[in-house]
Length: 189
Image (cartoon, rainbow, N blue to C red):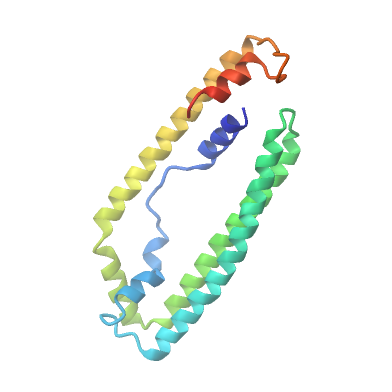
């Protein structure tokens, strides 16, 4: 039952990948690093970029720990069969707040990197980034299809669970689990 709830939660949270209208305004640090000679990055710029990335990585590490702890707490809540919806929603809000902080940190770093580059370097970096655009579009489409498939599977599992829960199972003496719980626990996802 716990696995089913986690799968349903994940399938609902995963949104189909779409073209990102904001991505064209930023250049990822690995792209700058990969093409630093083509972009004619100066020693001063290199040090500033490295410092910005180091600062962001330190923050990402802190946030990853926080996110993991919040996800673990959410999982623990979902282990309880009679879980409080309010408690789950509050914990989910904690998870989403950390995820939002991660995104803010990413955007802040990307803005700082953009300020380090000259206008000409920024244009060249964007041009270099767009060379791989067809491959990125294919990857986004694949991610979108995978998310849709995961949603469909989750919906099918939910329908199956609802059907099985509609017919009361018998309680076993050894585990206290119903036949339906045992059946769900033994099925692979």
